[in-house]
Structures are given as structure tokens and as C-alpha cells.
Length: 85
Image 1 (cartoon, rainbow, N blue to C red):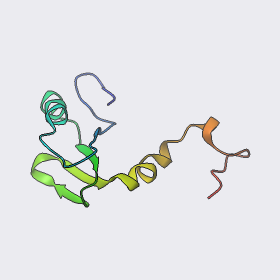
Image 2: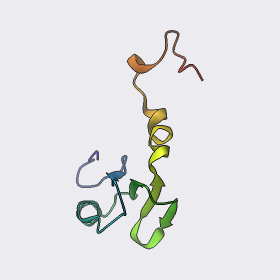
Image 3: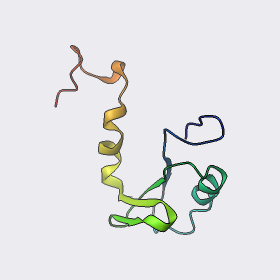
Image 4: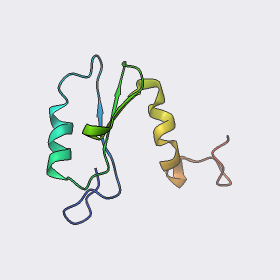
């Protein structure tokens, strides 16, 4: 999570669960501490779901790579600036 002053304006909070979503205490605490944070992502074995009232999106574990691919560093990209896709 990246902070901008007292607000989480750029990054979403992320939690990864190996099983059921559970209580997500740390994620809820982060969202309460930084009310300007746009929301949180939960990667788990659960199917896709969005809880708008809680600012949470549940994503399948296999989506983790696609969710972070656009944030690859230049060193992680193939020569010539292309990611090979």
C-alpha cells in the first residue's frame, strides 16, 4: 500500500488467502485507517465478487499475474521494451 500524506490515493490494499476469505482483519483495518483508499483486493480460491459497500473485490488466485502485469519494472521486460505479448 502506498501512502500520499494521510490518504491511500494511488495503491489498493491487497490480501491473499489460501482458503475461504475469512474475516480479512488486516484489510479492513487498512481501509478504516485510510478512508480515502479506493478499495482492496482479495486474491483467494473464491470466485470473482465485488462488495461495493466494503470497497472490496474478490479475485481468483490465477488472476494475480494479470492484475500486476501492467506494473512490471523495465528490468523485468524483454529486451527492446516489449513484454513479449
